[in-house]
Length: 89
Figure 1: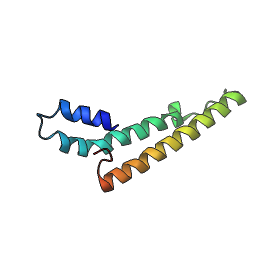
Figure 2: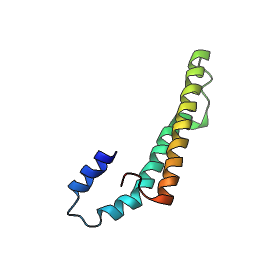
Figure 3: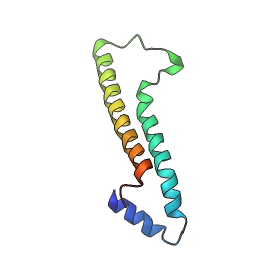
């Protein structure tokens, strides 16, 4: 992550507003990723698929638990970033 940030800063070094835009958008992009991870909970037309066999249902529930944990972890990181600034500087 540090390498990525340093390379991006080098690429946009001529752009004096880049750091401000990065600071402003970092948490927004992170929040989008939180929501993307939660897509596993989305039910098409609000319907639960009752045709899932037990094995598929178990797999879905495990995947949902994993994605929820990841999303919570990312949200916690974003809250800390919002309070204290980008961690990779």
